[in-house]
Length: 144
Ligand SMILES: [Zn+2]
Ligand SMILES: [Zn+2]
Image 1 (cartoon, rainbow, N blue to C red):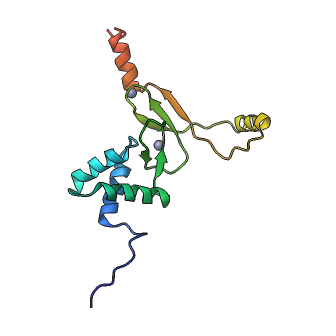
Image 2: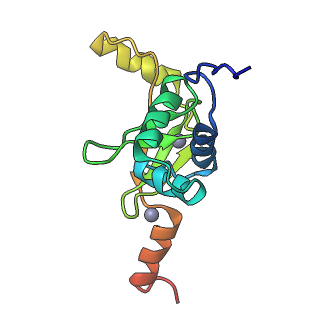
Image 3: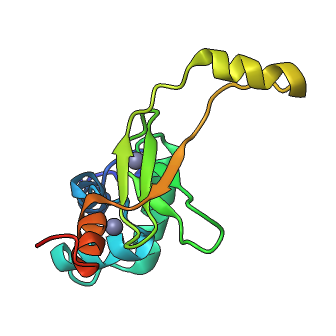
């Protein structure tokens, strides 16, 4: 008996699993290009189209999130789909997860004058990461 092929649209194939594993191990919110490079080290010969399709599938099925930092930046991928915010280093581009509890009164204050009804929020805090801040201090002779 020839084994019947089961629909793969909702299943993890070995390739999809490898892509998901790479994303889960990445704390740095990689771009699709970063993920492709990392997956290729593990699964030689895996195609870019497969990686891009799988990332779209992971986002659609709620297993990963997209992160857009700005129009000029490539879409990043986030292994965490739970609500959280981001610290974005303007110097090296590092993106770190952070949880910023926003006072609900702030949202109410916003809703008042604008008649806008907020349902959620996304915060990106721009600045310098610890490493860049330390490097800057070092460059100006701040560290003996
Ligand atoms: Zn930095
Ligand atoms: Zn994140």
